[in-house]
Length: 174
Image (cartoon, rainbow, N blue to C red; front, side, top):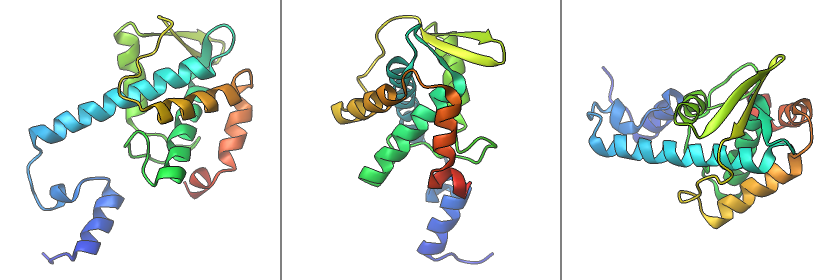
């Protein structure tokens, strides 16, 4: 019932994680769907390249460690470039911020036969089915960052990366 100022609309859209257009009642357009699909494809490539670079010598990585590698790539990119690499919105979860789309992306990658999932005691392990991960949606600089983060955490256990990320400001804020 009240008219919003631009700064109020921006704040509200950030809190609700929707575009300002949604607040104004602009219908969801085909271009928004196309943009969302492009973001999802890029996000999947971030996941796949993080899996490739951060997996252990057996080619496997825990679901949690993979999420943390993707998170680190996204947030380090954000610190350096003032924009997230993935373009995804993160939400609060008990083990730290994760985009909702992370779980959907893993399911789709598994359904498409790109990754394999197996249960190993309490851990869910992922591996690439093919040796190469697609990279056409990522810049060389983005790939280098993903690879350097993966290499830095390769061979380290999941709890080490969990402890590290829980000391970082984004997790503490959540």
